[in-house]
Structure formats: structure tokens, C-alpha cells
Image (cartoon, rainbow, N blue to C red; front, top):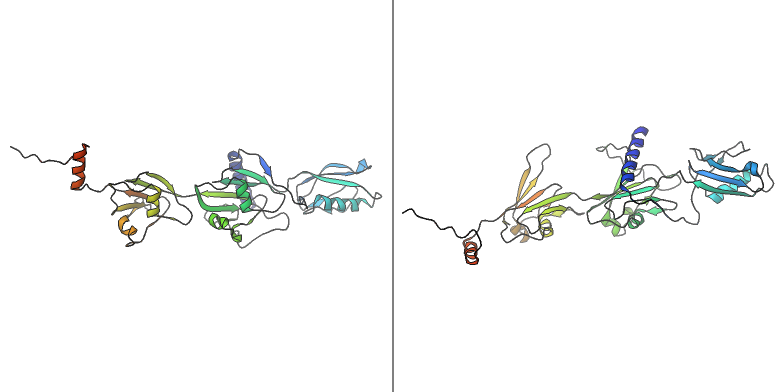
Length: 325
């Protein structure tokens, strides 16, 4: 299991490194400052006592600090520089009279950056030194593009270093993808509405993916045929036609065909929809699914259409039968 998680994290790291043009952007600290964690490298000095000075000393994986001349390790995990500095001074007070200690974090290695990619204006990484929530991260990344599906997936690659949210029942591993990393889906719409459940706290190492919307394709007698993204909440047929700038004058609106891929079958399912009847409220609108192909056919010409074409000089005039002599 550990190997699987490590592999997935490594794959994500490669993807993010390739996609990010920006460097790591730090987020400002609070008054309490950075909380030390396993792997952090510290520099400690005792005024007037160079034999006690340590240029670089690492906090071990259990969050402990082994100081020179001290047999019992000092607990460093989840303490600020000032708090740990007081602990070090207390430990050295057995050997020094009123020791004047300075301590700073030389390298912050206990918390990997948060990575944001997908349908945001700027794919970036953030170092977190205070509590940060999803809305703030997305905002600093420039906001969500119009190609977003309306869903944000947050992968939680590691538990919190210090006290913080765990939500063990809400973060689940997708059995279909077998990534070995728990994740949750959040709604962009709910996030914009300010709903608390859609704005989780983001932890170091989280990978935020603003998902791209699935697509449908509209072809035939519409003004702008092409690919359309399915927005949050779904895409009904009438909205898809409107997004394609409407149908042309020659569209066969009473028999719009929708081709839908069927699981396990090479042949798509064909659905016929009467657009005129739907607009009048006589039939239920069809909700499109990812990969659907909407074909608006060409209606057969009426006699009046031929007259107009004949009068205006355009091709395809009224066919005149020729009787043999």
C-alpha cells in the first residue's frame, strides 16, 4: 500500500512539474508562525557558547530533536520557532547559566507544496504556512476557466502534520481508479455560493484538480456546429442548440437525432427528439450525456422554397420534368 501511494504521488509530481510555469508561491504566515514538522532543518546558536552551536540539524521522522550534550530528545513537532527555542534553552540550562538561544528553520521540508492544475487561469504551487481554504487557493490561481465542468477534485496525499481536519469518513479512495490516494469532489457552484461544506481546508501536499467539462458535439443545420462542454448541472438539448447559436432556416427540427455510445456495443444508440414539441412543452427535454453527437438534419424543401430560389437566381431551382417527344 505504501509503495502504491508513493508511486501515485511521484506520478502526480511529474505531471505538475511539467505543467507549472510559475515557481512556488508562499502564502503569508500568521502571528504564530510556521509549525515545525518532521524533516525540517534547523539552525541553533547559543550566545557566547560556540560549542553548542548547530548549523544544520534535522527533526527526525517522529518529530524529535537530538541536541548536543542532551541525552533526552526535545519534542519539536508542531511547535513554532519561539516555542522550540524556549524548549532548547530549558534543556541547555543544565549546562549553561541563563543560555541565550536563537533558533530558526533553515529548510522547510516537512510539508510539500499544494499543487493546483486543470481548468484554472494559472497552474501553480503554494507553500502553506497558515490555514488556507479551497476558495482562497482557487482565487490566487486566477479563478476557474469557462471550460470547467463545475467540479473540483482534491487529492489528500498525506495526513496533516499537526492538528487539523481529518474527515476520515469523507475522504475515500476511488476503487475504479485504484490510485491509492483518498480524494473528494467539491462543487464550484456551491463554492461560489459560500457554502461551508464546499470550501474545505487545504493541507500541505494536497493536489487540487479543477476538472474539465465533458463534451458533446453538435453538427448539421446549426449556425455554429462544433464541440460544447457540459456545464455543472447538465446540458439539455435545447440549451445545446442555443449554445450553437440556434438552428438554421433549413433545419429539420421535428426529428433531431442524438447518437449515444452504448457500453459494450460498437454501435451507438440513436435517440430522436422533436425540438418543436419540446419548446412548446409537449415533450420532455433530453439531457445530453458526455460524448453525445447531436445531428440536426436538413428538412426537405417546400414548394415555396423552390419559388424563392428560382426568383433570386440561386442554384437548385424547381425541377421541371421534360417529357419525351
